[in-house]
Length: 266
Image (cartoon, rainbow, N blue to C red; front, side, top):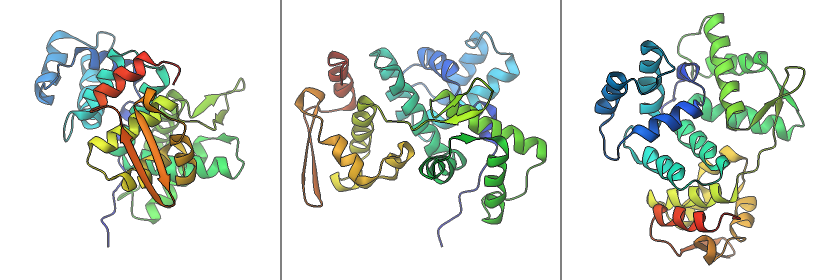
């Protein structure tokens, strides 16, 4: 039996933290060890608006687990995206990608609750809906010990806050949380495909990878999107039946980001 990945309350420590993440990436040095960076954030007060306790939480419980462990590749990619000034949506999409890879609760909620709710025609989501999701997780053994009501509500608000920050939820004028039928940006799709390529996945495995489902993309929809790209965007995609081929015109994700910067309409 596969090991059950249990949920934690980590999401309530920071939701998406987009601004703080941008700030930390701006100060992080390529190749810098996580522990050295954490110490420098503390010593130099790099998160000036946060208390010392809050800054420590952000760095140790959010930034390092999401972007520097078990390796710093996520931080390198996000820092490059900021340096090359790509579309704002791309940064949010990659924050979701790497955060969901690190946090089974966030990933499962997006895959098992957010997108199915949209496909069932639901327009709004509330804290009680998230609490019901937690109840099912307890039954499935994904929450080892039930959280208190206060903690459960805090985690629920963290989840919804994260999805609001990355554009999956918007607050209506009446304070209700409305689900957004999100469409992954073209640049985001290309970058994720290249990330998977650099991580060693075969062409067929890239097309089948579960990361696409975070953005509501099923295989056929994804392949239709990939056919729209050409050499100007750095990828020539081909398909013959069930066989797919990613013919990259760039040698690395860094080369792809340079290409996308010079082709902003993608």
